[in-house]
Image (cartoon, rainbow over all chains, first blue to last red; front, side, top):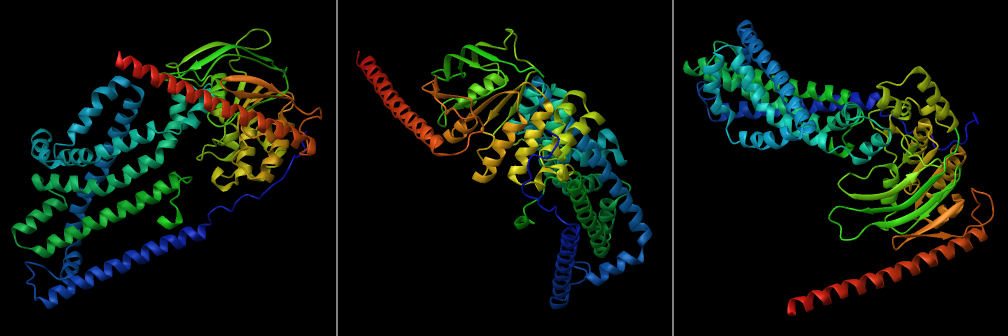
Length: 275
Length: 270
């Protein structure tokens, strides 16, 4: 009885690490090439059309601004980055929390789902002045702006993932007499992760928008504040430097989140043709 | 583990908003420790019957009848279920998939659970794959893991819903023999649409036709049977019976439909 009964095919080889690192190199290569092409076109436009620096500064001038006053840029960048990260954490916590409540408690779903959908009719940007009034000009209002802007995509993707668990898994759990909490923890939540991951990827890209819009409406620090000040003094190169850092944050946040999610959901891989 | 006999009495099922029951007043006895195969064409309701036995029919549908063991007690906790898909959780390694019931009932499998899972995987020739994710396995290997998970549940009754239908012929043949050996001593109900599979594995074969069960004759040779001329002969008879029943059912359904339309038309005229 303890002897192996049969042997058939060998396991299919797992995806080798080499392939992963080659994929990362390809992404880096594509990013570098795309950035160089954009910078080249930008520089060409400035030279060909003799653009004055207060309309469109050249990439070289922007680079000069980036390295000439790094402390100032760093201090403001740190404020914005903190707002984005805290906003992301708060938005994820609220979104996942509401999605779980809607799944577990029918009255919450019946009452809150229409409210959640209707809330999207109000532009989050229009809320910024009210948030300033309620939470002041400090970091709190920007964190809440960033959280609000990601709240909807996180909630809807998480809720969609939770309620579309393959029925076969749930049937199996039922025959194994799993209670609803164990079904939630061991089956529904892991099965919802790939869908939730799509929501998180959208969230990390839009969260900086919330933080910067908050800073535009009223703040004493951050890249949005720096851009407003530079704009008022026609220091457009400084504005572009702040914009460049903001874009860099978005790209870094997106790719680091993407890598983290891939590590957290190793069973869910994109098809090679789609990468 | 003592073998369990299953007695099904007056079993009926009608889905909510469906005009007719899927089956009504079914009576069936599954002998203890033996394989019973239920054969029927697609859509005849055999999966619904299996789901009813497994307790997977949602409460809003109309169910009645009794399903008991030889002592007249309900079968709760005595059933393991193996579906057409392997239903391996893609985020759990093979070993953890085998220990799924322990995870779902206790939160975490114990050292003893893992030791037993390793033993079962070794028996099924999967010792080297225990730390892989299901994605890295072939279809046949995945079904063997599903079989190990079923064995790990250690229940006297196993319900199988066409678990080999998605496999190629060679792997299916090999897995049938493997499953038969591994499930020795358990009461097994196998749902299938493949007459050859039913005749190969079933000590008892039932045809599920027109919402009724009819016993089919089987060769006298011991199971799992070899695919030989005799089995081919029985298979041909089963196919003829299934075809005839399907044709009769289509004619009856068409007559019923036209009678309904006629009475509706007359009702409108009046």
